[in-house]
Length: 244
Ligand SMILES: Cc1cc2nc3c(=O)[nH]c(=O)nc-3n(C[C@H](O)[C@H](O)[C@H](O)COP(=O)(O)O)c2cc1C
Image (cartoon, rainbow, N blue to C red):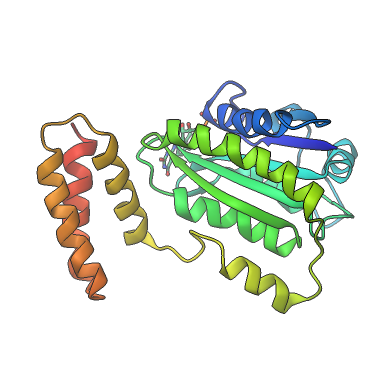
């Protein structure tokens, strides 16, 4: 069985590469698995021109021949980068229905955009009828933890391919599945709230307890659906630790 890892960042030795690598290592820890990593920057990927697939045929075939796909992208201004999007727009995978896929995005600066970015990747999986599992939005603050979880997701990908081959029967089926995935319905406040929580977990700043108090105040407001009132507390907690 083959698993392909696709690195969407033009920087071959960046964070996206490390994350995709972690998932591939997990996959290759299982018996009889062949892994291959490709860098989109090595291919002549052009924007869609309206004339069939402009994705290099070699990439189409590699995806078709793989039982599962790992796709990693960097976040630029709150979304996946253009190279990854051009790949998603143009790749043609004839046997995509039910193909297991794992999406990863890394917002390696402020962390903002990690949720909108992961949603873009899973929207692609949804539209192409692939079966996306374990959406993994990554920031600098949950990076090490994500490396570990991706190793496990890589293993899981192989087990699912072997034990639960899948095919979506209809749109209802597909929407029901994608509605059940985490992170698909999150907004601006959810994102900064998540990042503030990550900073509180990992920061060594002496202001952690003060930030935690603000965070818990925001949490209580969010639980009462007082979303707009919660914003300033979350942002204050995030800024307090981010700018340390
Ligand atoms: C044009 C551009 C826009 C960026 N926008 C964001 C952003 O919105 N949020 C963020 O957290 N990081 C942002 N970054 C930082 C990248 O996400 C970060 O450098 C990431 O590590 C890139 O992945 P790579 O290391 O695999 O290249 C941006 C970087 C560039 C070049």
